[in-house]
Length: 312
Image (cartoon, rainbow, N blue to C red; front, side, top):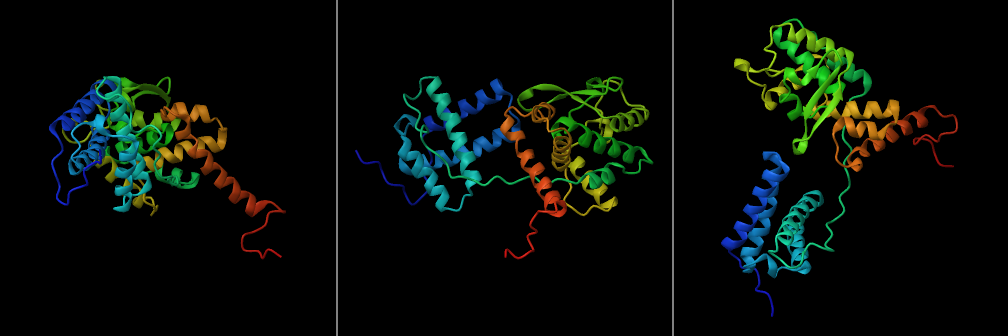
């Protein structure tokens, strides 16, 4: 039986489909402890699938097959959605269909065998070692700059995510041992080392009279500092220190990982430090390391061919 063609006007999806998606999102929040940001991304991607189903008159996910999913993705591609976004949308659909299959709501997974477009992986930008040192050596002359210096030192020392730094409490730190217990993605905790310079900066911050059970980095009224405030303070610190790159918390995390890998080549160790579930995520830093090596080779090796030299 031929499937109905898409209508010209938007049509609301069947309530049963919406209920299935909401049940899946609720399960993700409870079982996997995903962040509000991640859940919002899943919701947006599955909303596109719901809208497509509504336009096609699809009443149940069990009616979909692999060809339907390919048509759905192809339509999004023609509308200008980037390959990376298409991959993310397909990933959300896969997660939904696996949930439905597990709970007996569908008999087959329509995403099996469906591949998204290949997306070139964008290498993260990093600070070089001199730039990183110039940034973290922010003069600490008053309570706010003392706090900012400690934030910068800890970001670069331990490769924390922004959410991990904002959620850190003094009870999570062991300054004698030089370690911190952080709550990462999926509400997984890990122990990370804290370098001596970061420990010194944190001791200076604690000496301001911080509550032992309170947040390490505080905003107004003693509450945990807001992520947006951290981003703004780091941007201002970079400008103050004469760095005119786009400096942000994740750039310091990338820089920490890249510099560690250049020095140690210990991919597993860097994976543990960053809290990556998949080592493939960490391997992107090996590409950064190779780029650095290639530049050194091209500039220093007597038998290296300079790109500016003619080929014959």
